[in-house]
Image (cartoon, rainbow, N blue to C red):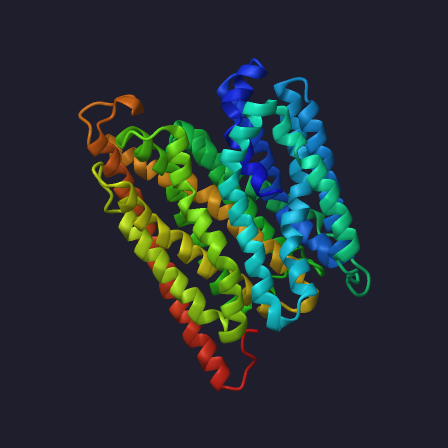
Length: 457
């Protein structure tokens, strides 16, 4: 629900502008408020899971998310809707931060990859179904039901979670929440997200963009210093002393950054190739559908053969698909597009589940909440960073081929294709970088295994 709520709301923004008598920048905050709260509170939510046991905060998050959905559906104005979306994001942060931890604690190591693969498949299906489902719901019942549809789903999910999610013990000894660290990290992530958003609008050389990113960097430095001194830090930085844990997390972050190329694909499909919005939306389902189909099988394979080879194969496919997308031209056929896009979905599906399983397998049991939060944060930060990065590369590529600026709808198809190729050339380099890190992790894992150390479960 928390995943589908991102994509299903994005398609409702034009309707919100008309229905709530507001402007598009204000309507964008309906989506941005939700994302900002999730990103900034992800690790704080994960720390609560380690302190209290993951079950209670997760159930609280599910309840808050469902209540927030009701409030959003009843919102009388755009301002109230933005506030209620932030409240809904609080519940979503608890759910997303602790979902992987619950799977890790519930299933034995021999079944962890399969279980995480099913979760990855569900997330991908949510991403794929969001836009068409949102359009259908708005067309039949109006925008309020984009939020109200979560009520029955949330209630069913809450009762099933109460019934089937096993109790988890709280952390041993006296537990203290690192409030100073939480505030520093929140300042870092909020300023970083706002800086990227503002940079997309006004340019990355704009004064406010630079100030926001500088504050984010300073807050990050402060956060690291606070964590090193706190007896019970919000993030145990010793986790990163494990090179395999760090490499897996970096690979996950890079993979989601390079997926940001998807933001420029609609411009190519609609304006360069002439597809309708609905047709373009269906074509763009190629990637998430591929992820959803492959993720459960990837998890099963990683349980049987180990995560390294499966995730490496996934990154190779991701690199191949990104390179294929970098060769698109306006005359390419429907099948030509799908043949290029399909390896991206298959590659991400093969990579994510085994990689997440490897990350969770390196974390001590009393730090599983933090590890789960870091997995979710890598995904969120990757998306937050990748979309403006690829959008900026696309815009630069388009403008560099024009003698003078034109409206995007008046830009020649060949120029749009050139912008898209530039974005996917960078995406290919990022995918190859992640592939190189996967090879490094594979050699480290083999060396540790030969040396008698514990192999990744």
